[in-house]
Image 1: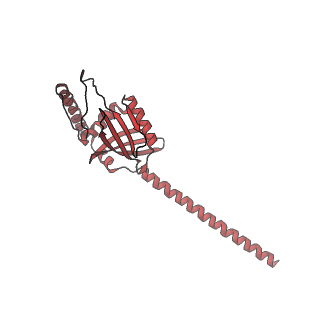
Image 2: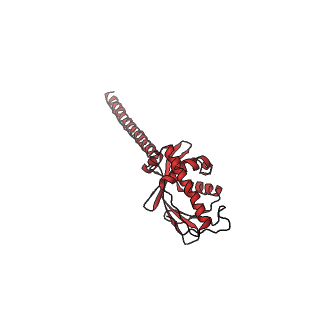
Image 3: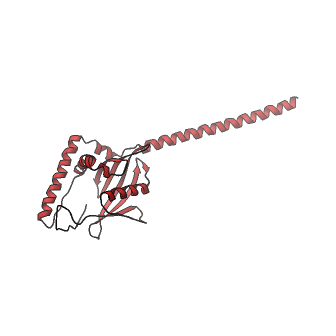
Length: 224
């Protein structure tokens, strides 16, 4: 009786230790999962500095810069109508003012679904483009870095896109390409994605004729 009881107690002791170890492992896995989810949540909700700064401009300043943008567009039309060669330049603030007012008020329906509040930052020959992206439970700032080059083909711009992210998390480029293609198609702009490139790349056909310049053909010589 004593021997049987001793074996039985030892057996229960082993089972108890094993159960304790399993519970410790399960608790550790749950805590690890929670930490990963919290880290992913914070990474997705990260707002890049350039985007935060662009959103910090007041509504009055945005309207002021947007008016400057529109004024330069009118000046460009007038110059192009009477001269064979012409050029213009817009500042980062003017572009963002136009995006925050005219685009947001009149052309938001042409943006990919879930995207709004477009902003840009221009530096060192490249552009950073960001927007608020909200779809389902996803609420983040989607942004990328893009290099723009005017190709040897007439009026064809090549875009090389790098670092497409949602906050700090890499964003699926396939979904991005489909949405951009659909939006440009609605705007009657032709785009062709380049397969096999190291970075995501596309070529966009700029128009050669404009309604404001009847009978004239336009060729772009330089884009910076």
